[in-house]
Amino acid sequence: MQAVHEKSVVNQPLDISEIARTHYDCVFRFCARRIGVDLAADAAQETFLTAQRVLGKYRGDAPLKTWLLGIAHNECRRLARKRKLEPASLEFRQDPSVSPESTWVDQQALAQAMAKLSAEHREAVILIELDGLSYEEAGAVLGIPAGTVKSRIHYAFVTLRRALFVSGVEA
Amino acid sequence: MNNMSEFLKAYIDGELPADQMQKVEQALQRDASLRAEFDQLRRISSTFRESAVTPVAAGLDKTLTALKKKPIVKRSPLLRIAPAVGLAFAGCLALVVVNQWMGRQPKFDDEVPSALPRHHKGKADSNREVALNNVQFGADYDDTIVVRAPADRSAGGGLSKAQTRSLQEDPSMTPPAAWDNSGTQKNGITLNSRAVSGHALPSIPEEEAVTAKKIVKTAQLALTVSNGKAASDAATKLATRVGGYVESSDLTGDDEQGMTGNLTLRVPVAKFQQAMTELQKLGKVTGVSSNGQDVTAAVADDAARLNAMKIQEQSYLKILTQAKHIDDVLAVKDRVDNVQQEIESLTAELKTMSKQADMSTISLTVNQKPAVKKVAAAGPAKDDWLNKSWNTAFTGLASAGKTLAQAFIFFVVFCPVWIPLVVLANLLARRMRLAS
Image (cartoon, rainbow over all chains, first blue to last red; front, side, top):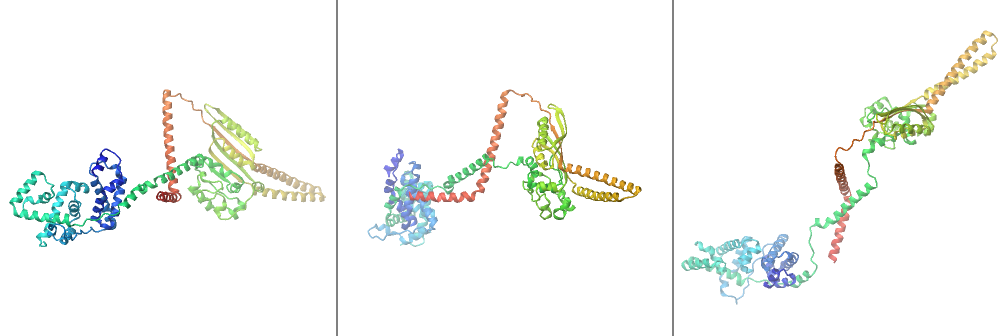
């Protein structure tokens, strides 16, 4: 990604195929977590086709990955609105090899608590916890300041903690 | 829960500045409840990061194939059809320009003067002429029209007094500009008695109508001309050409003060319409009146009386040959003389009426306005080109605006033609794009 970013900075033409090979997995996962695996491939393809059309407008101010995820975010919203999709449910794997710490929270209760979050808080949690973005990158994807992301993630976790621990759901 | 709890998630994510990180660490060491909250948040975060299912990406090849195709530039429907609509408007504009160039546009401004002689033209109008015995127009063409049907046609197509009055009161009958070549007024009223009465009249050829009927025609015509002498000469030549003559001629004035001329033309009644039409072309018609006096009944009456007189004369002459006494001879001779005098008188009267009916009278008045002296340009010569340029530009702008407005009207009216073409062209273009 860094190499591609540097190319754009020196105003060299960007190869959309190369960009797709580099970032397709990330974009696909991003889409799958929002509109489901079934439609993720279509959304990812539309994301790169849109990126191909507007690639000339990319000025390299933000990392290419963030720019692509921003396009993917809009594409997922458009598809969800068009097909009247519900938010994709969060899935957890039952893998005994993972760290014991991960079993400290009831996964089903966590999925239910996530489903009850508002769209903004849920989006912030997915971006930070699942997509692994920093607050600044998440703000760039959503088009909001990093401070707002920080606030949203704080309140989202307060809600989740209350749902999981304060109400006695703790495993 | 103290105020440090709001920084706990950011602390876990490593998104706090160094000084705040230190403050949170100190608070965690001091506060057990804060530590418990921190622990819960960390467990939630760990659950997300470690046990959430990561979707397996698929479809990269399909995406790469799609990216290799020529990108389809999405344009709004308005932008897609804009060239075709522009082409249609250009076509309408061209249509208007060609139409104007070919001179097919109706010249409404010229309609009033040009329409004036139309009702006198051709044989087809002769029937209407018989019905219109008296038609008068003023200089502004706003005088009343008096329509009177001939006496011998009153049964078939004449006008009642009420009909005549209604026509006189009808304001729509006043301007002759509304007449067309077929004798029908544009608002639907025909000025021959056929349409008014609802009965058809047999069409009578002009020559037959003239010989069958004895109508003494007179007309007064006033013209404003640019050259009084030339107009007078032209009128004289016209009278001679159609087989008539100038009965009297009077021309006074000069070019500077203006000129006035009065001419009395006698032309054959068969050429009356032609003469009137051609005379009206000599200048601007400021007044025209035409009067037809039907003397058919009087001629017939005189002819019958003449016949009776001749029979009476024959009778008297027969009696005269049989008279034996001188008193009887003198008495009969006296009667014969009286009858013969009446015969001669009637014959002369018949000849006069026939002559009047054969040769119509046209009283022509020509007026030449005083010449306007050309005043030297007040300003310097450079003002002329400035004014001319301004006038030319202004006229051009008005003309262009008129042309564009006409093109727009064509554009709107022709939409049933060009809209299907535009849709078809759009569909074809789209199909070709997709095929390529």
